[in-house]
Length: 271
Image 1 (cartoon, rainbow, N blue to C red):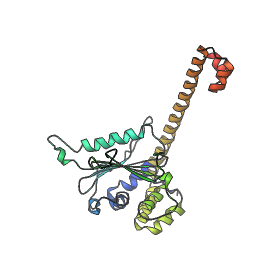
Image 2: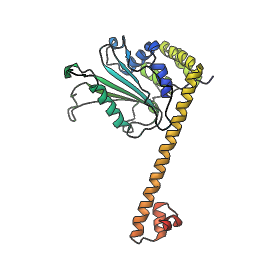
Image 3: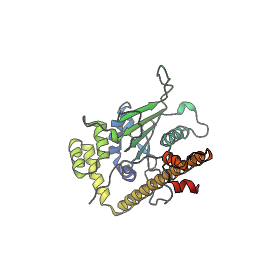
Image 4: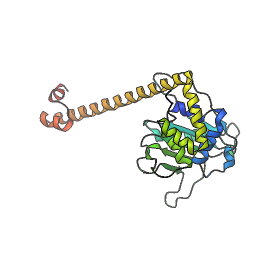
C-alpha cells in the first residue's frame, strides 16, 4: 500500500477536517498558534467537513479546512504544493470574507472575532524571508504597534524547514513534508498525536473511494500545472515576437534581432 501524502490537499482535509479526529486538528493548531489560549481549542467547530466527490476538469476546487474555536475565532487552513497565481491576493480576499461573514443583518462591529489564515506551502511562497514560519498583522509602519488583532496570516513554508530542532510545530510540518514510511514512523515514535495521525493516514490510504479521489486530485493538479506552464511559455514567445516587431520597425538587422530575442531568422522574417 502506498500512503497518501498529507501535503496533498485532499489527504490534508480528510486527515485534519474530519469531525471524528478534532484532537489531531487541535494539537496542530496549538503548535501553530501558541499565542492563543489552549481553551480556544477545547471545542472546535469545523465549518465544512465534507469533501466533494467530483472535481471539474477546468478548475481546481479550494480544499481548505475552515473552523471556529471555542471563543468564536475563525481559522482557515490552506495547503498548496505548487505555486498559484495571485496567491497573496487570494489569501487577503478570503481573510476579508472571514471577517465580513461574521456579521449578519443587524449585527454589530463589536461582535467581530479574530480571523486567522494559515497557509502551508511546499514551494518558496515568501522569498523575502528565509524563515519557515512568518506572521502578518496590521501594524503601524514605523512604530509597529497593531491597528487591531482582527486579521492575521501565518505562512508555513515546508521548503524552509530547519534541519535542527524538534517538537511542536516542527514535528507537524515534518509530518506534512514526509513522503516515506520511514519518515512517518520516526515522527510517530516521538509524538503520540502524530502517531494517531499516521494511523489514520494508513486507514485513509486503504480506502478505495478515498484513493480514487486522491488520484483524481493529483491528476487535476498536474494538468493545471501543465496548463499554467504552457500559458507562460506562450506569453514569453509572444513577448519575444513583439520585441522583434519593434526592432524590425527600427530597421535593426535581422541577425541582431535574432541574437537579442532568441528567435530564428525564419521566425523573424515571418512576422
